[in-house]
Amino acid sequence: MGKVINFAHRGSSQICPENTMAAFKKALEQGATGIETDVQLTSDGQMVLIHDETLERTTSGTGWVKDHTLQELKSLDAGSKFDSAFQNERIPLLDELLELVKDSGTIVNIELKNGVILYEGLEQKVIERVRAFNMSDRVVISSFNHYSLFLCKKLAPEIRTGILYMEGLYEPWEYARTLQADALHAYHYAVLPEFVAGAKASGKAYHPFTVNDVKEMERLLQAGVDGIITDYPDKLAALLAAKV
Ligand code: G3P
Ligand code: CA
Image: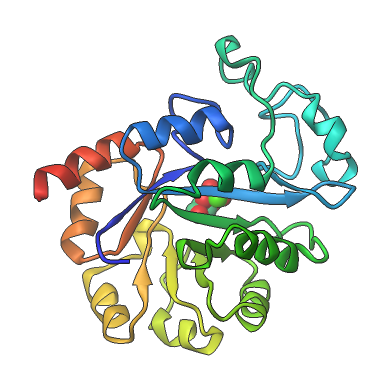
C-alpha cells in the first residue's frame, strides 16, 4: 500500500452522520485515502452499513438491524438524529460505497460487525461483492471476531485482513501470523514504537483506531504505522501533507 492510509472512521463522522453516503463523500473531499465502515445483514440477507446492531441511536427506526428487510431499513431516516439538515440520508448498502470509490485509489476497510450477532454467510457475501467490484487489492476486511477473519483468509487469500483488538497483546504480529492476517487494527493506546517495528519485520501493517488527537497522530506516524483510522480525516490529511 505504500503511503500512510488516512482512513475516515465511518466516513467523516464528526461533521456528517456516520456510515452515510454524505459522510463517505465528505471524507473523500477532505483528503481521506481510505474509508472505514461497518457491515451487517438485513433479515433478507442484504449487506448494509451501520455500526450498532440496533437502530435507535442513528436512525428513526427501532429494534435490531437483523430483524428488518432492506426495504424497511431504506425507509428510515439515517441523518436527522445527527442534524436535521441530513434528513434525506439513508442506511447505505455496501454496494453503494464500493460504487462510489471503485474508480479511485481509495482503500476500503470493511469491518464485519459479527461480534454480537453471528451473521451466517456474511464473510462469503462480502467477499463476493469485493470481487465483483474488482477491489480485492483495495480492501481490508477487519473484525473483532477473529474466527471470521480466519475464514475470510481461507475463502479469499488475496484480500487483506486486519485483526481488531483493544489490549496490549504480546507480540501481536505472531498472533497475526497464526491467522494469516495482514494488518493489526489496534486500539491506539495499545500501539508502541517497538510493536510497530516488530510487526514491520514480520510484514504486518499497523492501522490503529480511533485517533482524533493530532499529537497522538504524530506519535503514531513517528512510530511508523501504515495507516490511521480517524473521525477527522481533514486533520490527518493536513498533517500528512505537512510531512511530505
Ligand atoms: O475499525 C476500528 C473501529 O471502527 C472499531 O470499533 O466500535 O468504532 O466499530 P468501532
Ligand atoms: Ca468500525
